[in-house]
Length: 296
Image (cartoon, rainbow, N blue to C red; front, side):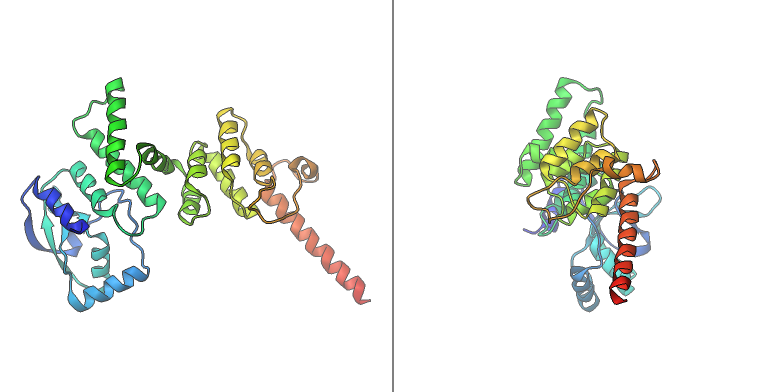
């Protein structure tokens, strides 16, 4: 049984569907849809298939109060149809609420072959939030905390992961986009990424700027160190620069200076990245002068 069949079976238990042909103009993506729709090789193949054979698997949608519909399953098929100019698509319409739709959306996508860490993170959060709203109290009681733990355990069990792993992925939703992108690219592993998620937004921006200027990423020990300093209110740009420029076994050899050694040569408001830019320009001028001197 494929993911769409599983989703349909799940929804049938809630509501009998209506099968329709619907205009793509009346279809809207699910709010905060966590799974990316990209124009990659897989999309090119799907587009070619739909262009030659049509939409073989109906979309799954739910009606909105304004007479239009929200997509639960089929965002990629809808995108492919719009690319080739198909204006109507087959769809199964289920009159379910948004929380039930959110749970169904996540369940129909989490078993895909390739899922980015960011997709899994926001998918787990979307499902956890939806489950929590379904008849749960909003006051923070021991019972509610226990229910949250149980929900995470259930989500993990359905996807072959532990409760703690589910919570770790959800922590990633606290990362700024630039750092989360590095997690998706495999440049930052899950465990250090979780530690970095505890940094304040401005601290994360400083970290991202330093990572890009120094062409490096933090190890687990460095991430833990930054988290501890952040919690103590002692993490700033200079501290981040000092931590990231510490020698690491997996980092290529480089020349580095302590910020306090060179800061006296620069205006007080200069960041490490700005100081590096000036130093490199001066070294470039020095190299050109040496070359001219040798040519005489």
